Image (cartoon, rainbow, N blue to C red; front, side, top):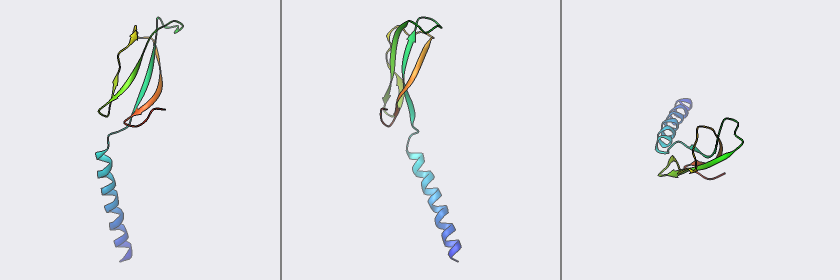
Length: 83
């Protein structure tokens, strides 16, 4: 009898835990982007930062020139905190 009660309690906890996790948004990483003039990545021509707006990551406005040659570094998470 004790085993059945324990099993039912564990099952109820799993269901409640899954329901509470569904209410919270997933954490998304935010990055800093550094743009370069060419594939050698020696001359920086611009940069941009991700922003956290209403729990979603949005790329901020590029300063300088945005190119297809870039590096990115983690700066935080959304929703969450900055590193």
